[in-house]
Length: 130
Image (cartoon, rainbow, N blue to C red; front, side, top):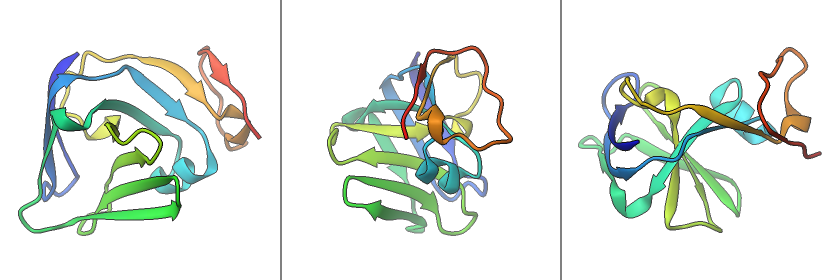
């Protein structure tokens, strides 16, 4: 899919993507589960194709480990972005914040070894990790 718009729940942080979005990957690692309250369903875009409008400076970044950070709205708490230090030219986008229709599909599940015990996964290619 090319081009998209999205926002947090309260609308205080809005963004636009002008380039291609990657299909959605569900990440079940413990950090993503705790950040989103479930697994993180995320797409990604080239960082230079992403524009964030945050007139009230509501977006906050949290780096629980040196190699990755998570962005959220400080007003409503919406999970917005994930950033890998190893891939600074791309930013992951929480897919649920995109305005539908997205035209995207879920293609993979990552870190399935860390999925919570209540979660049953659909038939997707999996990457297990401890």
